[in-house]
Image (cartoon, rainbow, N blue to C red):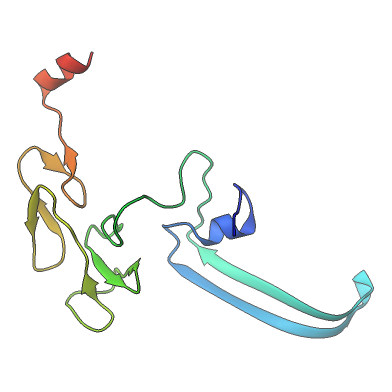
Length: 131
């Protein structure tokens, strides 16, 4: 299934959306639209996403870029409510240039940053090489 920017499904699958729920109702008739035997469905998702300049998800291993900066995972998705390993809390953090902490976060070595310590910090004299 593919969704384009601004379409319903694209907003629903946004990586930063954490709340989702749907409801439906059966209607014998909808008089204002001359429709019979209808099923109406509505969904809520939030916070909203579908920002044209960004992708809905980041490529990589599950739960390595969670907004909580911790790698707790449940069924392949970030679970920010976890504090310890359990049936619904599996630490999937990968610390490339750092050390995995007990809270499932990464403590990066000097010169590295990011949730998984894979981002190299540029030093002031490194910037001279870029320009």
